Amino acid sequence: MAELHVELVAADRKVWSGEAGLVVARTTAGDIGIMPGHQPYLGVLETGPVTIRTTGETGEGTVVAAVHGGFLSYTDGKLSLLAETAELADEIDVARAERALEEARAETDASAERRAAVRLEAAAVAR
Image: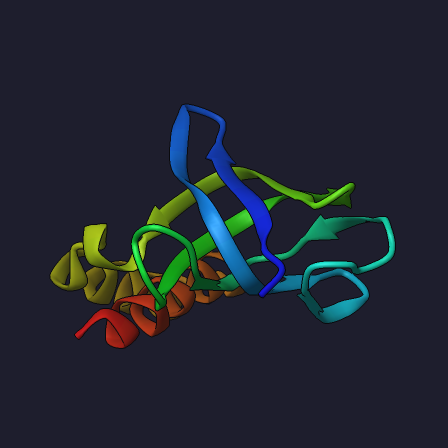
């Protein structure tokens, strides 16, 4: 099976790196799935979950991250997700995300509400 090398990097750290058979991310043009052999692509990431179907030495599985802004670039079998911020699902503090969601709703801050909701959505997958 063909694989693509994936690097998920936030402004402050490398979040995840490995081999995958499929990556699904939200861009300004809509959700996109990247598989090995995809045509070269450059897109702007929106706040949303990124789902990585892993392959390779670690075996098959799924990695989910909450990503907030950035860019996605695919060429020559390498997919780079360069995010403003990103958290793996198992790193998310659910109680803190729930409080952030409540505060955002109280302040009618749609952007903060979306970020908190995506964090909770990603964390639910890890459970």
